[in-house]
Each structure stands twice: as structure tokens, then as C-alpha cells.
Image (cartoon, rainbow, N blue to C red; front, top):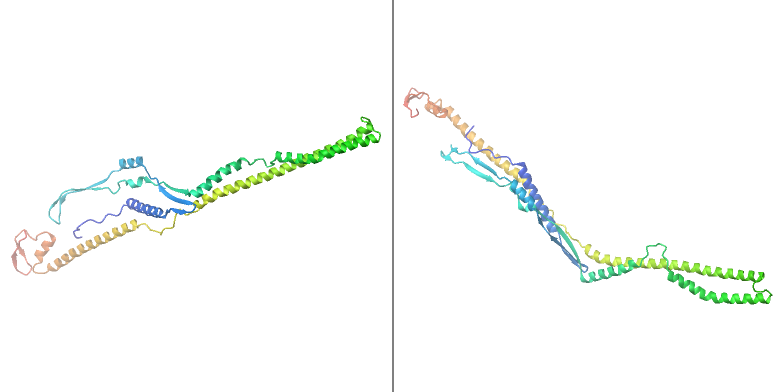
Length: 331
């Protein structure tokens, strides 16, 4: 092998490459998210984004306390190429130092604000809704006593004079027929009249009760409809804002291929190193070939001695291989 002018390039550290690739992926993702958030305005109101970032001070301090930079010191010595002495060299690798930016946390908030007009409608509907809900009965058999009493009283206003007239007529009829007050025939007829009039009163009461229930249910339905209308008014104002888009589609941006570029650079450096090694070996092989050819020629002895690093003889007179002798400068 020939003399190398350097060492082979070190293979990439997978952990470092993965960390760098992950950081680039996160930055690309964050860039896309930040550009997708949009503020909007329409007649109902507006939407806006705000980021209240927080910093993990404890986590960052712990990472810095645990961090130790990689310190490498090369040995000094004699440089065969330059013929000079090399001093030891110390290098510090801070590539793994914690990045302060990595300890920030995003806290995005989307705020929806109603326009003054929509806010006014919302507040009024909310106030009226409270009143409407307070008047709604939770009893499915809602009953309006006021309506029932009104129905009963109205019916009695028409029936009571008729009943009094019927009673007076019955008493006169019985007297004309010779029935005396208190005797059996008189009491029988008056009892029959009383039963008929009492039944009419009960019928009036039943009708009043039924009317009160029907009215109560109608009032309950009306209150529910009012509450639903007010709720719809409130919801329409909110929907006018919440229905607006808060994000938009951004172009699909790919993160730089750190891992691929790193391996590409490593392969390029390795190919260059291998080419240099092959070139050095080729030169050395050519010298050996020339030396082999010269061994059979007049200067074979001297060249052979040079290439082998030894002398044929301790004598200053070397045999040249053609019957001649010559002084040699190699001892």
C-alpha cells in the first residue's frame, strides 16, 4: 500500500442525523401551521389568532446541566509529509448543545368576536330567553287555573238564573197540585230538581277543567316556541362568526432531506478518499515496476538498493552488472 495523506471519513452518527432531521421536520410543520392560520371578518363579527408561548425553564436548565460538549485532542508528533513536528490539537464539538427554542411551547387561541349589532341581538335574546324559560312549566299536564275559573264562571252566569227560574216554577207547580212543603211528594220532586241542577254544575266544572288544561298546554307550547325562537336568534349570531374559516390550505412544503444529504456527502467524501488511495497505490506500483526493470540494467544495483531501502554491500564500491565498477554514494 502507498502512503495515505489522510484517514477515511467518519460515518455519520445516526442519532445526530435523526435529531437534525427531526428538528427540520418540526420547523417545516410549524411553518405550514403558522401560515395556515387566518383571521376573518364578516357582518356578524371577526375571528383572530393569538399565541401565548410558554418557556420550560426547568426543563432547559436540566438539559444544560446534563450537557457535556465532546472534546477531542489529537496526538502531536512527526509529520512525514512536511517533516515538521505537530502540536496536539484540541477541538470542542457543541453540536449536541440544548437549543433554547426547543423548550418553548405554543399555546394558540382562536378568538371569535361579535360585531356590535350581532352582540346587541345576542344580549337581548339572552335576556328574553331567561324570562321565557322562567314561564315554562316542567309539568307535562300544564293547567291554567285562571282560564278554568273564567270558563266556569261564564257558564254559571248563564245557568244560575235558569236554575233559579226552574226552582221557582217547580215550587209553584207543586203547590198548584196540592203538594205541601215537606211532604213526601214535594221532597221527591225537589230532590230530582236539585240532582239535575247539581249535575249541570259538575258538567260546568269539568268543562272548565278541560278548558284550563287545554289552555295551559297551549301556553306551554307558545312559551317553548318563543324560547326556541330566541335560542335560534342567539345561535344565528354565533354561527355567523363560528362558521367562518379559521385556517386555509397552504402548499405542501417538504422538509429538507437532512439524512439523505448527509449520507450523500459522506459517500462523496468516501469516494474521494478511495480514489486518492487508489491513485497513491498506483504511483507506488509504477515505481516498483520501474525498479524491477532497472534491476536488469546498468543501474540495477543502485536502484534496487534505493527501492529496498538497503545496500548491497557495506563497501563504497558497487557492482554495476556490466563488468564495471563505480563509486556509490549510498553507504
